Image (tube, rainbow, N blue to C red; front, side, top):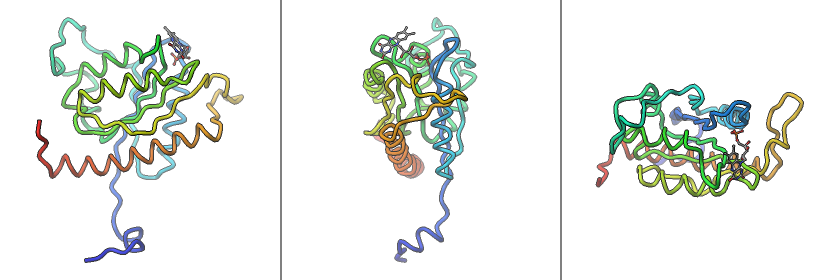
Length: 201
Ligand SMILES: Cc1cc2nc3c(=O)[nH]c(=O)nc-3n(C[C@H](O)[C@H](O)[C@H](O)COP(=O)(O)O)c2cc1C
C-alpha cells in the first residue's frame, strides 16, 4: 500500500522515543542541571520523547578496581541506560575534554550503549568543542552513532535569566533543534535496525 504524506501524518502511530539525558558534572554549584533542563524542555516539546534524566552527581558507580573490558559488575544505572533508545550528553569541557565522571559512566557499560544514537550539548569558556570531539571518538568505540550536529555553548553562565534558567540566543537554539532532529531520525532508524538486523560484530 502506498502511504501518502497525508496518511503518514494522520494514520501511522508514532513510536515513543526513550531518551536518556546524561548530566555529566558532579561539582557543587555546577551548571549542568541548568543546561539539562533546557534540553529536557526541548525534548518534551517534540511530543514523542520520554526523558530519563541521569544526573551523575546522584550516580554511584563501583570502584574502578572491579572494571574489566566490556564493563564490569552491573551498576545501579545499567538498566536505565539499557532501556534508552538514544542519549543526550550534557557535559562541560574540562581541560580540553569531557569530565572523568562521564568517562567512568561510559567505561562501566558496554552492551547498554551499543547501536544507539547520541548527541552532545557541551559548554565551556570557548564553547565545549574539544569535549564534543573527544566524546565522538570514545562513543564510536562503543558502536554509538553520534549526530553530525551538536550544540556547543560558549559561556552559558552569562545567559541565565532571573530564575537561573538558560536563555539561548537564536543560533544556539537552532543548534539544539538541529541536533535533536538528527537524533530523532537516528533513534527510529537504529531501533528498527536493532530489532530486525544482524550487526556484523
Ligand atoms: C577542572 C576544570 C577544567 C576546566 N577546563 C576548561 C576547558 O578546558 N575549556 C573550557 O572552555 N572551560 C573549562 N573550564 C570551565 C568550565 O567550562 C566551567 O567552569 C563550567 O561551568 C563547568 O561546568 P559545570 O559547572 O557544570 O561543572 C574548566 C573548569 C574546571 C572545573
